[in-house]
Image 1 (cartoon, rainbow over the protein chains, first blue to last red):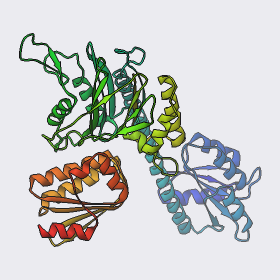
Image 2 (cartoon, rainbow over the protein chains, first blue to last red):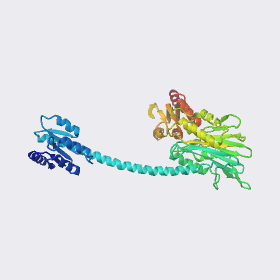
Image 3 (tube, rainbow over the protein chains, first blue to last red):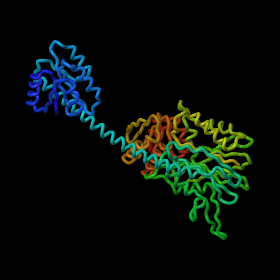
Image 4 (spheres, rainbow over the protein chains, first blue to last red):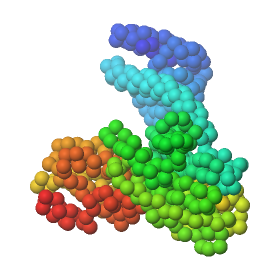
Length: 402
Length: 112
């Protein structure tokens, strides 16, 4: 470590220098503040021992200038002051000096103070290295986060593309929906599709949890519940007699098959709740099967909204159980609302849940609105309830309008 | 969420308090798994002081329940009103053995 000795008296400089060199330190000497500052700014010294009173500028100035210089490493400063002069100590340390020593200098004391200063410089060095490491780690984390976010956004776009088209009606039935994942990806999924000339199918699924694992399960189920896949299919099966056409599976049979296929175990504990329905657009019926899912809400065109409560256990919990359906007869103008518990369990700032009653009232309010306006109204009610924070759980709602 | 464990003779007791949600699931799952494996087939999960559960929490409880069934053991729940109503919404009350309080649960498990 190199020590700079600043003193206008030549003898003093030599005596201090000789003493420090005997202790093994490298030294530089100057006789004025400007020269001292120049050397400090060059970065060739880490330690300064300076006299207080000198012609052309005193220790206060040097300390202030060194501290204001914002150098990359810390400079340790000891001021040398006369015995009678206590004011310079206060002034000097306020100006940035770290320690002081009185004249005449006791060199073993000076040496002890220098060693203390070395410890400080060592700490500062470690701190700097630590900060550098932290900085590098932070940058790596930020970059990794960027990549993950980018991936998640792409996945979210893919998930959204699986959702049903709202612009075209199927067999006279129109739909619209709300879909707000709590993080990029949702554990909820829903769909609406034709099964044959007079039948449509629809479902809403809420996989336990939320986030990536739940979303992956929702992708799997979405693929499986497509009526177009050739060969083995959950929604239709080939009859064993001529003309061997595809027959539509009943709603309970679909859910029972999924229940058998997706039993939870050690490796996958994510069960799911679901509603599956088959609409016969000729007979004007809806065969609805609910499995652990929040009760669907039926808005009669000429009567109050009511919850459809019949339902069985969530899917994947107990194999082989029976599921049952309920048959609804619909009239033109009726609407069916399917939603996930992210809505009913949505907490306001006070911690109160939105609840099914409030949902029923929100749905009642949408009487007479177009389905697009209906979705907007429900969205507004939920967001207003929640306030400004994001959602804790995935928000999904599907409305079918006959 | 806070997890406390107790033992009453051969009955393992886990007491949960606070909110039991997705972030808490891994730790609770581990603890319950250990107790199911190492215990004597009598486990009480006391959620009287749980203020909220979500589906991840239910998934953990179901997983412990099924593991316990494989050992021909019993898992009994004691629920706060809010936990009870959330469990009833998914009809899980038809799966779990639920007791009104800890004393009743311990008595039921002790009776074998």
